[in-house]
Image 1: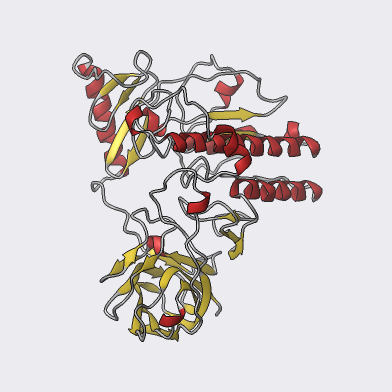
Image 2 (image 1 turned 90 degrees about the horizontal axis):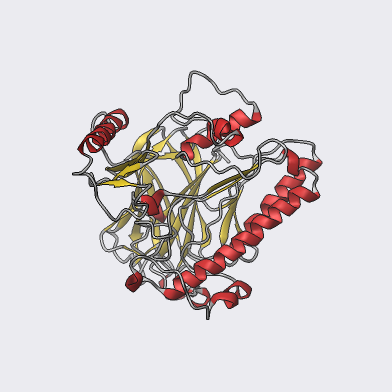
Length: 453
């Protein structure tokens, strides 16, 4: 909500570990989801749209799905269509494929298709189809080795198969149907395109890199200047023009003649290679004038519009013998907390000083209750004791259609640790055990700080 949304329902993480009635965030309060997550998110989005229409108000609805993505969980009615299907299309490295991973992804796509259809049907039933701009797009390539139209790479790659995504837009009566735009574009073009289509002026003192695609949408053959789209991951950068891609390894590919990036033509095209290498160098200098540096900005607590701050295990650093449930941090938790010298920390910045209520999400078996933990920040301290046992089983494996690499999940419960006065400023927010009467402190999932004064 603090990022501008009046109504929010979902999860604030790059990945979620369970898709059937998982823990979700509804306007800052954790709730239990209702059924399969893609269906649930769609239900909430349609309810929001209908409420806005009934109140005669315009709306912007952003409906991001977490499928098709691992864990490969999908309802039986979709899985049954694909579980025995003979796969005809394969990745360019078929020996690395997991057939059931692809089958589950196809089943997930069927479910996404059904849910997108539900949204479009809802717009029609409300009589607002012609007044609503609908955009369908995805974020990156597949998160596994599966069919990718022979493109090189997958999610996490800067090659075509890692960054190329579909983009479909519909606005009946305003945008001509059937136009196919061949010029390159990127997510940076979404904002200027939407404001242009909606007739919303943008502040001139806040320049952006994207451009409005409206002229191309109105006429796909319109004159269009040559441009470059840069993609980066940490300190690696690739660049794409309409015809060429320079990889982060300075390999050059003709994307018209060789869309699969199989033939490096850098030596045959030295001038183009040099031009694109210089463009990458200029981009790096513009974006990283002091060279690439890892993003070590502190975790912001108590900023305007966000009286509640979530600090998950995902973003924390463990010290000592504490272990993370998976090497993939999203939706992970900490366990094996057995020593008073162990700790969990966040590099934090308190934007607004005040009194905060601290809530832990944890699990702990009956035999290990009684540990005393301390939360501290720049001299302020709060102690609390774990008194209620809660030892649920891990869930997820029974619903998985393919073997997962990420963490399984379980039902963590909240415990109010108490109130702590946090001064404004930066420092290390630390969670540490002072006393451990059993074999462990707890399994830790999340810390929430609610500003109350």
